[in-house]
Amino acid sequence: MLPGLKAGFTLDARLEADSEPVIWLGLCELRIMNDKRWPWLLLIPQRPGVEEIHDLTPLDQAMLTFEANLTAQALKKITACTKINTAALGNIVRQLHVHVVARTEGDAAWPGPVWGHGPREPYERDDLGRFAEAIRAAL
Image 1 (cartoon, rainbow, N blue to C red):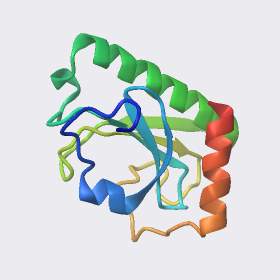
Image 2: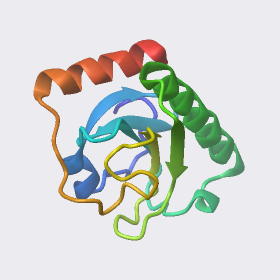
Image 3: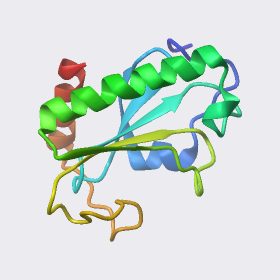
């Protein structure tokens, strides 16, 4: 069993298909959303059946906040972005996951949300690997 993985946890197939793993942080698996238009990370708490932040235990809520802040700081450091957007929507994929997105004035969707803004543009494999390594180093 992988570190932090709770018995019965299964990653939603859509999250698995749209993202690539980066590192295990403790509570969450950190993944890169495979869309090169934005530096976009996902935190996925490894808890079965959890859809909302308030479904987590108080300790897991604190850990999620810590890991989200750590991730946001690392992303800001490596991208020098204008703004970090952090959100847990779950309207389509119910499994709890937190988006951490680096935004820059003038990016493809600025100042609107990135969700639903045109077709996804996947990374080239080497670029994805470099981004993942930069995130790991910044953490």
